[in-house]
Amino acid sequence: MADAVAQRPEAIKAVPVRHPGRWVAAVVVLAVAAAIVYTIAAAIQSDLTSFGSGWAAVGHYVFHRLILQGIVVTLELTVLAMVIGIILGVILAVMRISPNPVVSSVSWFYVWFFRGTPVLVQIFFWFNLNLILPHIGIGIPFTSIWWQVSTNTLITPFMAATLGLGLNEAAYMAEIVRAGIISVEHGQTEAAQALGMDRLLVMQRIVLPQAMRVIIPPTGNETISMLKTSSLAFAASVTELFTRQQQIATATYAVLELLIVASIWYLVMTSILTVGQYYLERRFGRGTQRGLPMTPFQRFRRMLVTFHAPPPATQEAPVVLPSEHR
Amino acid sequence: MAGTPMVKAEAVHKNFGRLEVLRGIDLEVAPREVMCMIGPSGSGKSTFLRCINHLEKIDAGRLSVDGELVGYRQQGDKLYELRDAEVCRKRSEIGMVFQRFNLFPHMTALENVIEAPLRVKRESRAVAVDQGRRLLERVGLAEKVNAYPNQLSGGQQQRVAIARALAMQPKLMLFDEPTSALDPELVGEVLDVMRGLAEDGMTMVVVTHEMGFAREVGDSLVFMDGGVVVEEGKPKAVLTNPQHERTRTFLSSVL
Ligand SMILES: Nc1ncnc2c1ncn2[C@@H]1O[C@H](COP(=O)(O)OP(=O)(O)O)[C@@H](O)[C@H]1O
Ligand SMILES: [Mg+2]
Image (cartoon, rainbow over the protein chains, first blue to last red):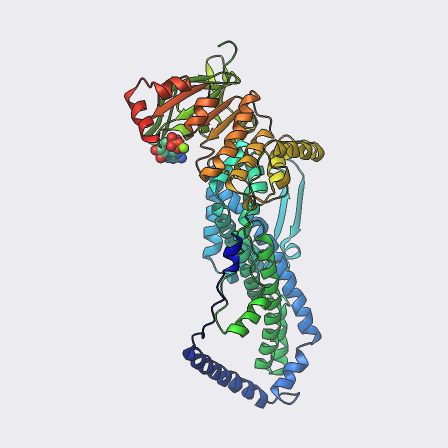
């Protein structure tokens, strides 16, 4: 076959197809976007605040101590609520596919209830729990062992918001985890069972690790969404980012400027999470894809070069392994 | 045939809802015997193997492995369902190889093989790894210890699956069409491994369409159709001189 290689014809050189329509569309879209941004930016510029122009006020407050403190609280709320949501969500998902009908119904009911009522209502519920339940305690029946605290001590505003956000998130995470579990081929469970693994081992060692590939992307979206939804903690007077900007805005009348400050920080945080999510997805794709997809930077460079929509991840040529013989 | 049979089925029935899949299976597999099963698609071969391995519950009849009832414990004349832990223990003594390999894609070949010894038998990692390497060597894959399933050919994957089942030191191996999903040129390497197992005295029940294997390696051949055993005998006899019309029709359609 050596001469077949030698006879390879020279590579094709052709004039690429031009896409004038794409250029026109791009220019129109950019022009409209620029007009909108300019109008708003100019309006803020002309807004008079105690710091001069509106943008000066934005610059002053963007690193304000209260705003930075608010960011910390926002992050705490997000992390705690997601931790509660993920742990409880996994438990609910596993309960849902349990052969015990009572256990799976409880899980179904939980999801139905918490998905069917607004988060705001749930946060308010925990926040106002002391109105109907001034003390919370646990004890062992028929003994004098009894422990209780006042509801106000146990459920601080921060706790109320965390519970409201976390318990609500668990309902969504339960569905995400369940979808991940269902996505794992039944043959996997069967092979694991045939090896003598019990239900818990099968779930923990075989099904959940494979379900991760399906669970991670929407969980990333949920986390990003939670970062913003945590602003509802405003309703429980938790001093997170949104509440802080609102407090400053009320005192200084720089309402839009502070909304911009908050938006900048929300955008910064969600952007960081988006990048983190991307690399997490790559990591959990291991063993399921032969070639890793391009990183955003690689895609961006490629897009600049070709002005085409980024092509789907290039599939590496399958690794051909010689079948060794005994 | 002296001693306890490894598998003994008496009038085994199984239905899925109103569909009767097994309608009275009677057969015996002696220790060290290789029994091959053939039969048209949907005749209940896979279901029967799954019953042996406690993956399905039988509805009527008796099924026992190595003298112990499958799925139940008998005390006096009463049957008690086995608890989950007991079912798991029994499954761990029976190896099963599937048509679609079902390797764990997130684990390397070696990790696939040592998973059950580590987690189910709670062997030490050193012992499990040592055994795992030897098993992979035995199926001719010493070089592929660290490869992920998607880096292996179908034949290699199936050989890892066999090593994985052997790692639990089973007393019985069940094969459900182990070569049906393979490209023709890869069938031989898997059959070679199975032939080696048979030579080492492993008791095997093999659902297969490889008549050559059945003839050379099998001690007995069972033809199933419509949820019953239609014909059973020495492989050569059944293949060259079938007694039943249905067997003849089936053989002429596959040979
Ligand atoms: N879990 C199940 N639920 C309902 N029907 C099933 C199930 N498994 C198998 N069957 C049916 O049982 C019959 C026998 O299937 P199977 O044992 O797989 O046959 P074979 O392996 O001989 O091709 C088929 O009609 C199949 O559709
Ligand atoms: Mg089958």
